[in-house]
Image (cartoon, rainbow, N blue to C red; front, side, top):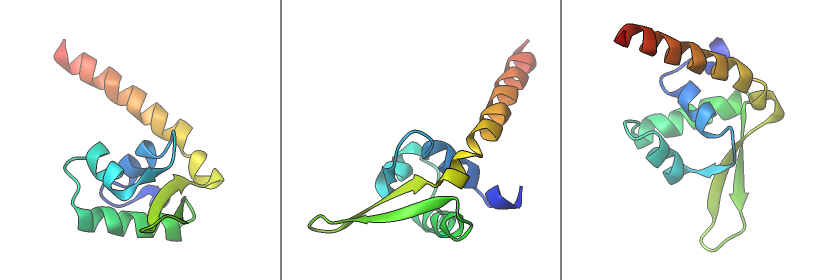
Length: 94
């Protein structure tokens, strides 16, 4: 749990599960997150070895974030949490 601790960290990992994303794409995917918090989470997740930060050789340079192989291993656990959340939401609406 310490690997995915921090506000929005699971959301960031979840948004990166399919393909690399740029900073602003992540901001669109997670609307309530501030730029400061997103930047902090990306830095923390990179330090924990869960994501890579790739500087693309474009003009001007751009950056993409992607899950590492280690980060990909968290997807089944996050998927299970999402599935339980959906079940609880359906049960609460009954």
